[in-house]
Image 1 (cartoon, rainbow, N blue to C red):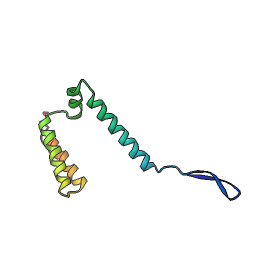
Image 2 (cartoon, helix red, strand yellow):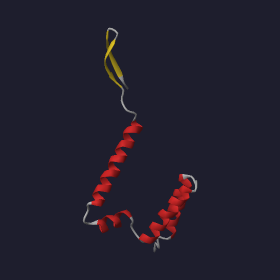
Image 3 (tube, rainbow, N blue to C red):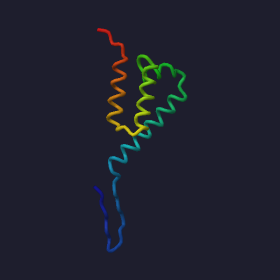
Image 4 (cartoon, one colour):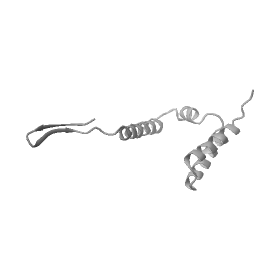
Length: 96
């Protein structure tokens, strides 16, 4: 909610808050940039990669590549995400 303070015909102070969407997007970009710097200057890159891509890395990389190709070819984000998750789960080699 914004406000204005009037003295006569002049606007002395005006405050219009940013929408929550814009501030969330800015926060997301700051987090992404921080993560990139941490990853770029980290001595334990293998540990970070193991946290980001658990399990078989080749399967995950192939699924990410397929996900990106699906998006490039015009498939909807939800369909591409479902296909990505399905491929990861099918190749997870989960044992009971």
